[in-house]
Image 1 (cartoon, one colour):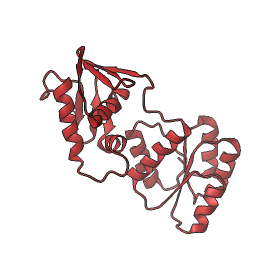
Image 2 (cartoon, helix red, strand yellow):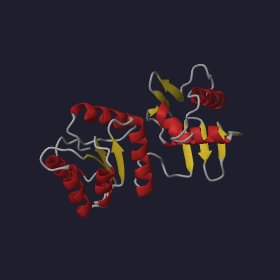
Image 3 (tube, one colour):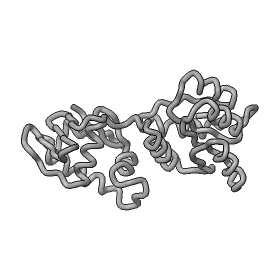
Image 4 (cartoon, helix red, strand yellow):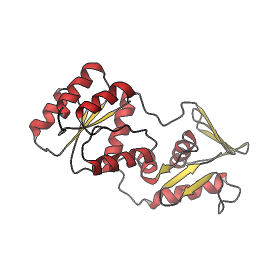
Length: 222
């Protein structure tokens, strides 16, 4: 991330790290290029208005060396600025002020399209605690017994198992299972978590596998 406003940089870094991404930050264009060449990141978030070397120049230099996805941030909202960024190789464009949740969703979408998403375990069989999930046959066994899971419950359990041991925020789970455009009641997630616990926990009221991280989200342990 190349961003010269500390408040924005800190907010974006916190949001991305909370979702499991590693973030390397730079406060100006020259440092951004140096860190890009040293770190070889999977994606670049790049402010347009930077001291010394501009965001457009940084984008041009990066694109000459790499096809890495680039999201440009700017306070400018004119069509000419958007076109300029996209024409020199930016993949997406977010205008300040922006929703951090939207930015994180765009990061995930670009990584998926680039084939670089760092989230899920690619195996067809996922295991955690008493659960064994065969994603190819859409079958789940709990303590050796086949248990039926409706579609959304299956998707939620798959998301948790594929990232077992990691904190998954409520926003992340909702966007992964119900989609980034979901605007329904977020308690839907809690209802589905309760249903999963009834099927996989020995005592659903004292879960040891699908645990709550208070104020943040859930994680699958085991």
